[in-house]
Image (tube, rainbow, N blue to C red; front, side, top):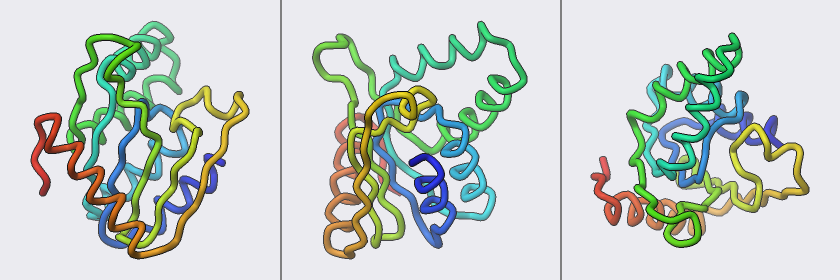
Length: 151
């Protein structure tokens, strides 16, 4: 699944909107960074508490892989809003959605995390302009709701 997600991200021409609890999967991080370097506009929202846990795990590990993921994440997070979660039972940013170029949506139970591939998760690929625009609007609403600005 993560290979397909990375391929869809890498096919972006103009924009990527993401709403995700965590973004720690290497292939996803690498694809998002590639798109940033190519000038694709990336915006979105993530759960700060969840990603803080991921970052702490990377720091504890100290492995080259963890260092590389941290560098990729640090580039991406500057383009995203960190949703503050006060309780793991209420208010967590638990979306797993990427909208690409107002034409494609990836959504489902698959977290964009390293652990997702070890679970029984799924993802739906929707290629429909009307639906993709609705998802983009939804993610923009989340960005605004949690203190960001839509660019």
